[in-house]
Length: 516
Image (cartoon, rainbow, N blue to C red; front, top):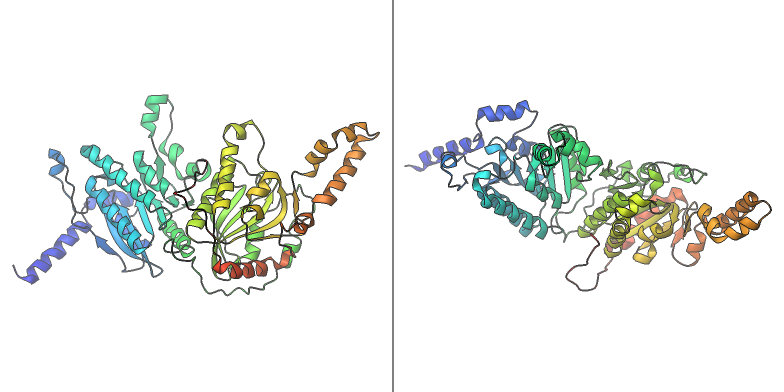
């Protein structure tokens, strides 16, 4: 056969592979409001940049009925391309082929792109839309999943790993996305759960739908599995592109920097009056963040989970930074179990990928109560403490208002290696708030007073004068400077520039034992 004929045959085979699921299944995918695996890659990656691996791979299942069907690609599209000109490795599960179910050959394709991504130092994005393990392959399918899990773990903290859930993701399949750095779900068409509604009905007699069990709303608000939820697949792709713009390619590169059009010495006078005079009155910490960062752009992660703490990315003079901030608008910004876990995971991600941390603090303490204690607030609060103390990236804290008790220590205080710790004049740094403090310290004196209410008020005013200001801590060097709020932006920019060449390390060890 001539080269020309062989070339034409190759082109024909390639076209077959691209439509291997068949027109009916492709149409069914579209009727569900979902793109096909290849359409997703076309929309996610820069136009014309995708290069495919292993198009001609087929399964090796010995099952007689399965052996009659051996579509090319075996249900997953793998390869690499670019997003914004930056190298990205991808795999996209193809629901039109065996329901996207995973075989050993399928898993080997995913492992291959993960290995290459780690070798060249580039992020991996996995698009999940699968019915789970291919039952006919038995333990081989389970081995395939385990191979993927291992790579997820080994490359965690080496290259960014992002999971897009654009269809079903059930059973053991959920553990791969759970290990990755960010999980993004699409409304209405995606869900994740370990055991499905039918199994739950059989075992516990509980009636629940797939949406109620593992839909995007559940994982965005209750479980915290989803970092972002978007209305459509196209919105998911847009969110991921924005997320990637803040991330380095791998753990050896610095956080990315872009051109800044926002003056670094911009003064925001509104910051001087944004904190209410009444310390019990809430405000939205997002307003403060947006007045300080470049162009007011704050890309928030897990916005609906543990809303009493904010996490996300922004830029200061074009430099990518991770933001961790207490949110007085939700539970007064108190640290509870979920907030501690959310904050700790984000801090550790930023530390792994050389992204400086900026903390905005207004925290009255840890949430009291039996529910919090029984659910492990000691263990979970220690996670956030561990994460900040362990991290070696540049770390800056701005105390806006309250910084009480153990929460002061945990929120990147100077004592756990905070590099630059600033405070606004409204900062209150103390073991506890004035109401509780006077009852503990002056209980007997209040009881003996002729007018206990008046005495209590006098003592509270004295306590406030002593501790409801940042100067007691500043005198001891625990606060580097008390600053005019309107100048916060330039102070942070200058601090980041100064810390750009920071070198810090932890004692030699295999790894720490974070209280999981």
